[in-house]
Length: 300
Figure (tube, rainbow, N blue to C red):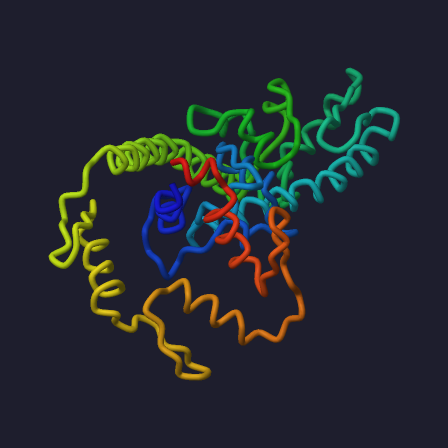
């Protein structure tokens, strides 16, 4: 179903856009600043590492993912500053835990000091009072406490949402990340609908008899384009590809590919394990094996 898989490289796996100039393979996007775990975390869609070479992603979705990843990294970095503030206010013995699992135990005498946390953003540490509000007032149907953990990496208990503040900028970033995730999950259903459609078309292609007859021989094709290619290659011997290096013309694209590989100055040889025949490149060995030795493929 190679032709079906090729369709997935022409559509964004996340937003379903088809703007070719903005598309690239997910595998080419993954790096130290955006990992496959980030893609899963911020979209809610599980994509295996092997699938990153088959699925495409658009420039707009990449930018949104990187923005979410950068925000999360900033929150985690500021988390250590926040617990440094805890130590100053309450003493190091009252701040326990590590990284995202940190919690704080306060005595009754310390409760008045908790007001300090309503005057600083829990995530970016900004102190602009006109932009601050309690996290509890931000949590709702469009942004849950679970979303806060997912997009910031910081675990905050429900009880703490009434004690900690969040600024307007961080609230907006969280809601934007949540909205993007929801859009990705919604489009995921459309994507699998496309999968079913392509598979059904693939099966139908196997079941149908060829209805496009060649006027020169008994051959019949299932698609008009295949019939036209057959006529040009087999009967008209039309040159479809020309080597830009030596000018040699080729009727079939495969022989052109083999020829272009021969221009590469490599000393490697690829030996067929079934018959010991050697080839100058891997593609020729693969086609040789499928044609002569792969009985299961030939039986189909």
